Length: 289
Image (cartoon, rainbow, N blue to C red; front, side, top):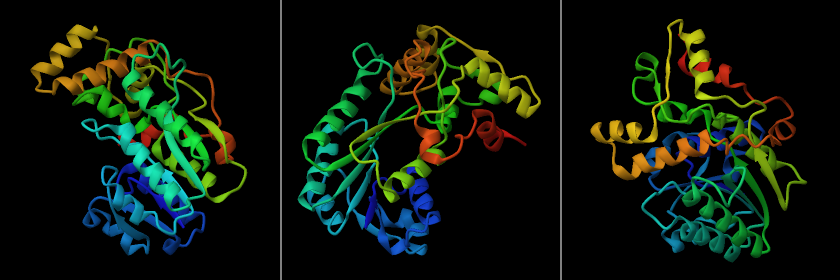
């Protein structure tokens, strides 16, 4: 039995669809959800549903009963102690005798100097805790998702221009579909235990590059506006964006500007057995006419 956490989210759902395409019977897949009504499509496919959340240890223990492999997607609850949440899941997995955990982490150049320590410390803390349990593990150090470009770029960016202070920093963006497929490979084939993989694209691109691609795809000029951090924060504040969100986006912009995601490491092509989707193809599918 394989359990996928965050199953109603984009990555969790993508991983489940990839498992089904690889021939894993639906009844051998369990989706951990907080609201079963939001997982009606999975239920209709024959996937088992278990209700629980990372803060409720007993619900996770119950959900993991009979599970052999776990795809642990990191928490996106910014108000919670996410490291404690992850430990809850790992402890529940150990209590139930789970044999293998695949954990989604973050690919970055240097943990010590990163502009996003609030993210990296949780990921590295989770990985270290997992390694001490004795459970077989695979760590996916993911780059930034291509799916997140629209959130970084700002509202109405196709018309108003990309407004994001990332300078000329480059990122080897990857769509969630490729990550979900890679996870399905690891969960269904041997030889991935006790390994850490860099899950990144073969090529890295700046937001200036992205603006150029979008201009080609849409047939209209998409500008890249590269404000300084103060101007960016002020503009978002005036637009009503919560202060903590402004800080979060500004930190990621700084990390991108500093080249932190351009690590020149990638194991994704070997896992997929093909080249990852190129960013322009993703943008064409997402934003093309």
